[in-house]
Image (cartoon, rainbow, N blue to C red):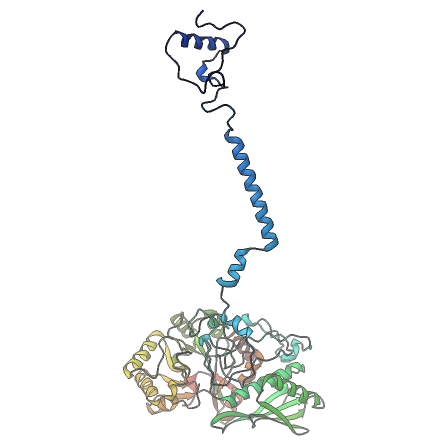
Length: 555
């Protein structure tokens, strides 16, 4: 009968090889209905919903699941091979970045260059200053401190915090003097001898980068190679005493005087070295230390008990060798007493250094950069602590524009009106200021007309002028006197060589000048070593010298 299946025989599938190429749409009519009913009767399901039929295509076509599995397998194999390649040959990205992406810093390039010894000097300028070159300013034509070999030296304590490990009663001997005690690595130094901050070495010409103690743009080099050599001899003497395990009281400055030679002014010092026995060991150690720390100094033993040290052939130190018999007699003091003013330049960046200086038990004068980050805040801090405040006015150095003194500087090419405006602006920026001194300025201070303009701009302010003497031919002091302003000159730079013991020796030297001449002015900077030295010197200094403000000195 039509619509019924032949018993025992299955109808051919329409999508198999014999039944047709594919499924055809249902036909209207009796036969189509019989086929549907027959299928339904057998399977219990409509043929259109059968779970065994494909929705289209030929029988045997691959499903999606095997394709995905093969793709995942291929990815895993590729990843494994890549890991093996990286392990064997290294990362190509690393080689690319190492070879081209990062340029070496100025400091790294400098480390690769051979350095030849040079005659010393002065302040933070160069190795560079890049504190400009910048920072502590570099000057090729001026003498520079050599790169010194490593010498044994006892540690100086935790300098950044100002803590001192020495015994105040016995001096440096309490710290230990073993030959194996390492000397702290000498940082890259400016021609002046002061350490140059890493940031400053990065960019030639920059001087106003964020700074902390020990990372500051200091003075340019001083054009005074003999006095620079004197500073190195001073340091060699301090190192010799330290290496021999002797206390600071064994080396005493008996007298000091200013001498002139070769167009330069320098300090000639008579000293006394008190020893426990024969001087042979001291003399030999001094010779070795001088050879390491100065290429211009020599020592000659004129007698069993007398040494003469020369710099560039000029006598600078006369050292009497005495037998140690306890505390030496007091040094004679000028009639009327001795007064010493200590000025700390470059204030306005490190507030922690400013707070440490304000906390000293004797007064120091704060000389503030007018355009520093914390100029007003530092000036207010000093004023509240009862400290004297000055303006540290940037001026043009000899190597300008390679060496930059910073914004707001007095430049020789400026018109008088512009110079006067810069001075008035500096006065406005530093509250409570009672005086002014120069930052850098080895060129500008030689210009009498420019210095006259600066001093005339201070007329009516009641301020005094302190000539930092960054060049021996400076006219700032003389023009201030001519303008009727109280005027002073710097006697000693404290931290040309940033070493705590050496700074304390320079403080002793400044005090001795005050004792001999009645008064003296020392200038330092907010270095950690300087702050530490000032703290310890407060306990060991000669109390016959009064620490006063600059304004309290006779002008």
